[in-house]
Image (tube, rainbow, N blue to C red):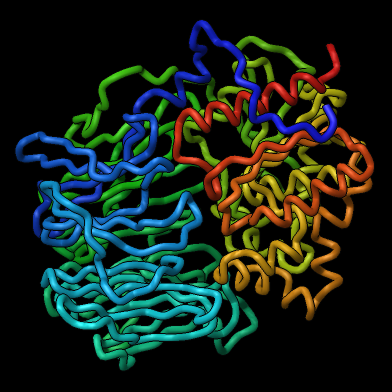
Length: 606
């Protein structure tokens, strides 16, 4: 098919296959809970077929759907007293909007902070007094502004800067506000500032100063005790993310040498005497408890796989969201209970991953492989590239790769340079030769997959979403002989136009990655743009795009598609009315079905 629009293709499916059940089976997120009303919780579920926010009163067991929008809602938080649900209201996924709130028990929504115009969200902090909020906003015109909003008063700007920034946390008594900022111009490595409610600075910490290394900091949270000025932060001073306690009043820094090989994050136990530690290493994660008084570090038993979220409850128990590539996600507790078990269809399992390490131009590359049970190569193989780029694939459940496996493909996911979880140097390696660096690693794994007999070189699919979609289009143009089919989901396709149209925070990231704007470093943008190589693309190309996407905007995708059309290249485009992905289950299923059908229709027979 050449230049076709595929929106009308909806094949009849008399019996629901496992791959579709994995999308339709009810899912729940890790419940958030109110600090001063821990029986009140908020979680996300797809129970109605669209991902929405739900209120849960643990004391009565009652659950209530709190939001109901055609394109779904996932960005919400409980006020510390449990009285209000705050949720972010944008237009059809464009991420530009305002905060609204509703009573926990139900009732009409209202504008949470009257007087604030719509913007991109840049963090939210709610004080325990029930009257005060700290709201971060970002717009193309203003840059970042952070506002102090008190009930019955006009919101006041307490921070403003052209570069990206965001609200980190409020101290337990509301007297201190921690923010992350990139005033130094490096959007990959934030600095920290602590403000009083009037906007005056209390303390600054910036690891990008005074040395040649680029080191980042992040806010993990203030100690949950009135008058306690300890702030838990993450730092990269030893080549990976680790936690540290910073007393913002005295300046004292207390490093925590946990002797763990991977990236480490943490949050406070509710009494402030211990930390719940999440350790991620080589695509898997584990939980530990660190006693700040004794220095004892003890493991919290969890199954092998990935913990995608965890929280310590007031009774000392820990709730966590766990999955593996083979086993669907579940919210569990160290008490032994399943915290939330949604009724309805049971999610079918998939197959486990195998780990492979491949020598690449920048070091050993970690790849995760799934293949149909009992299969032998060479197999048609999907190279599924993760987004980010500062993210990583893990041994966690993913319905998309599982669907490809069900259809007879091997799936390879690659934690290329730029991925997190393998040390700061690996994450930071992609600068300036953006996209090309990652594709060197993809090429090395592809060569291994073919030479090992796993992958059939005549039946290779390159795919990914967001940054993975960008790498897909770039790979099809720079490695035109390597791929049979390309499937790019919400991609960057024309880097220069994407830069000018995208949200301000992503402009800042692109300036960091490429070393300037398209006008300042045109040769780097040209070298890293899929549009530069579009006339070299030989493989059939499938592209899906959200028409309201502020991250990978539609105009730059249209520019790429017009170039494909101009030379009669085989391609198909699917545009849908949402942003950077869809929260509607039917839409997700439709998109993946069309992607697999396109790949299958252009795959040579074995």
